[in-house]
Image (cartoon, rainbow, N blue to C red):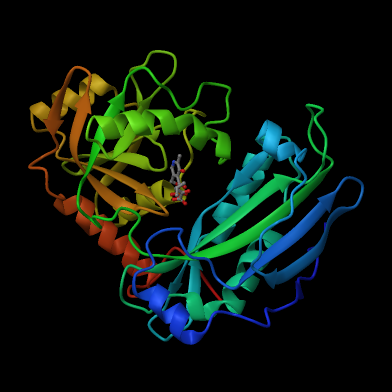
Length: 361
Ligand code: PLP
Ligand code: COI
């Protein structure tokens, strides 16, 4: 399938430099959007067509649009970083494109070619390059590619029309506390995903499934929920929007991809970076008993969460119905901080990108 050419229809009324710069001083996460977006249509029998870069604007949606009723929706998250020479580069966009294809397959949606996904992200970042925050800090431009069904009707079946979009939002720290450790609620009853379900797809339904437990966590004074497997309620899977890593001195363990957790691109990158830094990365099952007991006996020295939005965030305290403990001394551990710095340095172009992860624009 050939990639449709993206037709440029730039905004005649972008935000002024002063307004944009005021936003970039403190962007928060997902609160402001750039001047443009990309839209590409897919129609049964015709494939991908009408690729456009247009002014950012609301969509007009029929009340009987299939996505509104049956949730056929997938999305991605990746970031563009300002490099030391003022240019811009994205981090592993092909990996996001591949995961988007895998999510599409799971939700019976059409698969967007990798090169079209990457070209759409590139076009938006190039057009709105002024929105990529300055080099040197932790800020970046977060890209949100997503796809919805565009067909109207209430029959339960895959739609025959879809709309792919990319929007962009300048991003500061995902958690207001920055690298401050987060507290975790261990959810022993509510699960996020089940074997054979959609846990390894990046689809809105998984996030909807996580919101009630997240609200319950907040009532326990916790920032995030750690989900367990849905069968034995014993094996640690991931957080609502991040994967987990367990640091046993030099051994660094992340839960095995069982099909009910998301294969994070940050998680995957850290398996490589940890080895680069002389650690022994490992994918293995971790039980809640192990998490609690190894924290108590001191062999589990650090725990951290990782993902595009949150980068690497240390875990400070863990609470469950059965009790609570502090991870290490409750402050960010040295391995967590070292991996975080190395990852950010690659993304910001400060150290050499030996794995070819950066995609310059
Ligand atoms: N797990 C979930 C449920 C997520 O939403 C995310 C965020 O994208 C991750 C893990 C981490 O994935 P990545 O590192 O690709 O951002
Ligand atoms: C990301 O890290 O890109 C995520 O999707 C996490 C969350 C914002 C949904």
